[in-house]
Length: 229
Image 1: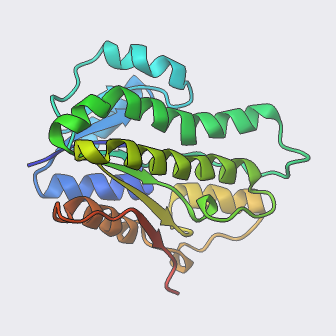
Image 2: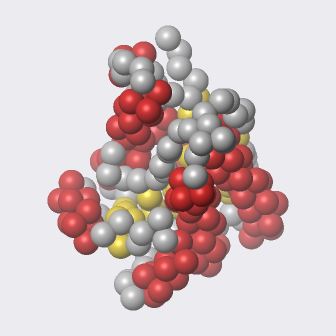
């Protein structure tokens, strides 16, 4: 049985991964933004442990984690939480940039830094759920894409740095996936949302679990998951 620390387990891809791992008896540690969310996660995933930390304030994560129990080892650290705010470069203000960079890039970097010793103990796996926007940027997606391009660089650097410590690093690049975040994105785009057109979160969860389950003689570095319809 492995120990897995997951961000974004409250919905979408994160919830699908957490459910699948829980069903097979793995130990879950779920990061929640506040005590209320932590209670919801604990009720949804009986037996899971919760940690409270606000990804929107990455500079406070060190203090927050220092006040709470942590696992002795982490077999997979999965960065799945994210935020998106669309807007043209000429229109989007600094706060929108800062929030997306904080949650999507700086917080994963800081959380990885703080928990890396526990990942090294397990010779574990760090998974960054990126986005198709981390491979190509389009109009109105500048801030979000910048955060995800940065996340790709973070993963690539971490992989090179931690290879000799036995730590594996995978970036997963889902296309549009039927999640609450996707529904919000459609509203921002002024488009009608039809979940049946997009990837089921369970399919992305399958890609993530395949990566962490891969035998130790191999490593999936970059996994793109695209809608099949």
